[in-house]
Image (cartoon, rainbow over all chains, first blue to last red; front, side):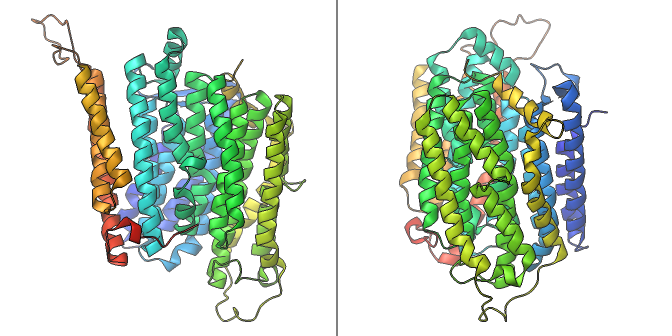
Amino acid sequence: MNLIPFLIVIPLAAAFFIPLVGKRIKISGDIISIAATISLSGISIFLASLIATQKVLMFEVGKWAAPMGISMVVDGFSVFMLVIVNSIAFLVALYSTGYIKKYTDTWKFYTLFMLMVGGMNGVLIAGDLFNMYVALEIAAIAGYALVAFGIDAEGLEASFKYAVMGAVGSSFMLMGIALLYSYTSTLNMADMANVIANKGASKIILFVSALFIMGFGLKAALVPFHAWLPDAHSSAPTPISAMLSGVLIKVLGIYALSRIFFNIFGMTPKISMILIGLAVISMVVAGILAFGQYDIKRLLAYSSISQIGYIALGLGIATPLSIMGALFHLFNHSISKSLLFLNAGAIESSMGTRDLRKMTGVLARSPVIGYTNLIGAMSISGIPPLGGFWSKIIIIFACIQADRPVLAFIAIAVSILTLGYYFKAVTPVLFGSKGTHLDNKSKPITVTMAVPMVILAILSVVSVLLLLPNTGRSFLDGAIAVLVKGAIR
Amino acid sequence: MITVYILCLVLFSVGLYCILRKRNLIKIIIGIGIMEYAVNLFFILSGYRTEGRSPIFASDQAIKNMVDPLPQAIVSTLIVIGLSLTLLIISIAIRIYEKYGTFDITRINKLKG
């Protein structure tokens, strides 16, 4: 039996059933969404084991053959992302059961959450550009609604901003897809790549590339297009911030961008230069802006932009080593940034504030939050034994290997900047004395909130296993192999 | 034919201008609508053939010049997506009005930095 369609069917079915029973039975939303996400992670890990031997899995909807019919394709890169997305979705769903109690109508939250997961899975397995666009819109619209879920003034404002900018970005994307369709008369990605390879490069491809960089760059929040991200990610309910920062910007932005530029157009020196330029601006500008933040979630959001810059830098250089660094950094960043956002939510609900200047002594109050937060911050800012260090150093070595010492210098400087703003923010919060003025509000976190944080902390410690042969290297190599095919030769 | 494409581009630019320059939330939403329809129109135009007929096979008719049906199918999907987006943004705008008491985007500025 082909398991690929279930990656879309399960979340959409869950999103359908939760409203049916959720009004009557309060706990059904929790149970259905946890069951759905755990089965999705199971399926994606099983597909990963299949991909190790078969390279490409395909499902043709209604048995119509590939260029005409709709096809769902899973290869090394998609399965790499599928495992990340669905496992983090599971952990976030588990965390939500404890966190979401402060809102009414939790079934609406889970419905939108499952729609978002379904949309992201749809982007990852889509075999043609239009289905990718539709799935992307499903995920994005669910995201706009979830940012405004709290119905507080900030959330609504951020959601409006995000929705308007997202709609503009989508229009540009769609314009690009329309132009590409009239140029190649196909929408299937593999077919499109063949047609473009036969027809050769032309000016229309350049124009379409500009439209796509605008559209997908906006979804990935590279710097000139980043204005929505700090607002949206800091105003959303915390589990959603973790999903948005951890996986949504990577799936909608980085994954879609690299699919198009590596697998359809093929990387050219021009595109590579533009990507590197955007990446460097993102890294530096967002890194500097993060210094001025005192809201813990805003600081994390700016840090996300900066780290996305690293990923785009690795993809922009487009040598096998840099692609490996970019994908490994993507993996590490999704784990540790989700962890940090979940921590921020736990701190917020146990202390009643998000202002970094007002919180102190987290480690003394709650060792679970404190130590996991320390591990997450260390991984992101690149302290040696943790995953973030290895991915950053691979990207830096790739810059040197590609004979671009200036980029290597910038990457090192930004990593020091990252270390700077994390430890400026995190050290007093963690190691400060256990203040007395907050004690009346302080309440312990639940087990369901603690377990995902501990799992994510363990994952960010052991993520280096992906680099070692025999443990997880084939998983990473499968993803690299897909992208290297389209790299500059 | 080229005139139609230019008019389509003008429509797109009108929508973009409306989003960028207008201060009223509702006008911005209308701008998004205009932009979406310009893109839809562009999709339809890409499938248009002069003197083309609908692509329905009939035994007594020779098929010479057909309109491409795929963009039309795509656009019907896009209209639904656009509808859901517009609905969502309008409901958010109504809630914003309840919280801030204004539709003026320069006065909706609690988030900074």
